[in-house]
Image (cartoon, rainbow, N blue to C red):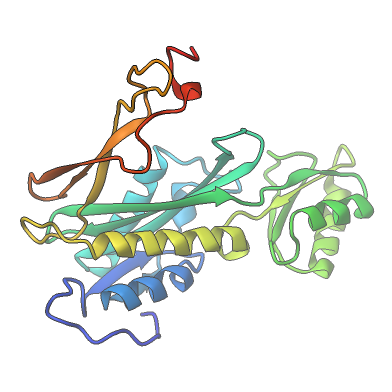
Amino acid sequence: MWPEKTPAPTPTAPYAGQRVALLTQHGKERWVAPVLQAALGCQIERVGGFDTDRLGSFTRETARAGSQLDAARQKARIGMQLSGLSLGLASEGSFAPDPFSGQLPWNLELLVFIDEPRGIEVVAQAQGAALHVHGLAADWAQAQALARRAGFPAHHLTLRPDDADDPRVCKGLADWNALQAAFDRALAQSHSGLIFLENDLRAHAHPGRQQHIERAAQALAAKLQTRCPACDCPGFGLIERIPGLPCADCGRPTREPCADLYGCLRCDLRQKRARTDSQLADPARCDTCNP
């Protein structure tokens, strides 16, 4: 159980005093638990005893089966089974090119909260640019230059002989002496005379991910604090963006959202809320003006 003090439970807080299972082996409770405990009055209990890398690993020994959400959901369920708790929480991260230019590494963090008694699942996310530097080095000077670009030693590194797919991986390198020793060992094993280095993307080894995980926890807390006006169920929020904002030039509907649809996860209540920040879409977003 996370040791920090939590607020005294109140009758209006549905999760006050409740125990929530969090399955993690990479220290994610450090960035999730303080946020949720302060906001909800719950107790986040770290669950061990299961190698979460079996569901997919950033170092590519095991490919993730299914989607990022599938993996987070499976982790939460396993944590609930191992702990015997009816409330479960899990985190799953991914890296891909940024959605704007496609040139920068982009980190998306998901948090899934499963409330078995209420039959609901609440998902929150945070995303942004994050370091994912990788490359080949033929000597220690090149390795040092690459490590500095990767934010080392605050951001940990992994390395392998020869290439990115070599199974002989050394993880969690966190200081210069350890990095040089691992580099020398790998160089002695390399057939090509090259060593592949990259950021260690596991949560405990990557400060950029840690920031996004904490932001995802804040988003989850906000969702769980929002109650349905009809049935009082936690998690009332945005479920769909409705396209159709008219183009500023031709007036035709675009794929830009004109309204948001909010809803309850348990009952049928739905609320359509018109977009207030903009009444017209940029013609650059119009399929008629800019096909």
